[in-house]
Image 1 (cartoon, rainbow, N blue to C red):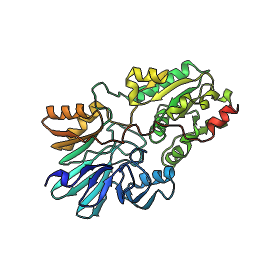
Image 2: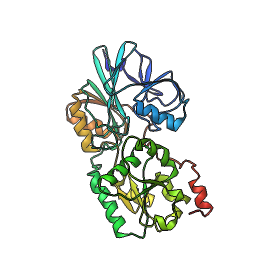
Image 3: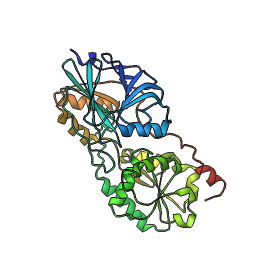
Image 4: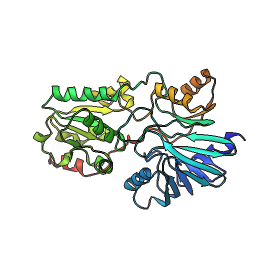
Length: 350
């Protein structure tokens, strides 16, 4: 049997005709398997959703209690029977609850990895290679220029800057799910024990993480005075770096934590003074390390620099093709949610 008979691209995402489910569908479907809770992969309106318990919790937190008709939590390593196939979820190392999904049926093993990284992260289960015939890989940073380096070294850059400019606040743009909480954990691991200030859009998600990890003292930035914020480190959605909200901080140093900060032009375009190359996706070295580890003879590539990774696979003797799926990409880089923070800044409550 060809692998496309088990899993194939469709207009709304990957589809398994033998069991009638989609993976990370772009619009409402009857049955959805969700790899993780970022907004480009997890949407409301499905009839039935299978995901890890953490992913379901986070979807509920972000989308409301009625985000799906029914939900079914699946633990890592647990097998579920759906029609003529079995599925199981395995750690992807991307964010809390993220999973690779293994689909088995008719003599084929296909892994839909979603977004993943094989770099250590104190706030989620580490990536585990899963043996398969076909591996579906993301390609967000699938160019040799993207080598992320050591996150601890990037955190030291931030701490050195904070020590050098004690009168200035450091504002760090970070995605609300995963990146912000990972940065807090890395700061704590580096010995930073002062309160960390949060934009309102990060509070509920960070509170969820704080139930599972020791993130230390966290404070809403909206409740702090300007004098208190001198020398502080504060986290916010990337779009908030240029928002009215940022005006409450004394002479802020603008920072942004992202794999895209490897490209200096991106940092300049965003007006980032201190770029921090910290990513929740595999870099080029990670991708070219993970793919052989799966043992897959065929690689399907999606959302990112697809052609470059397909070419590399060909040089390794692997069959590969791009899927050209649309609708997936930068998961959190949108408008700042209205939490009232910007209104306070406008009204002079800095």
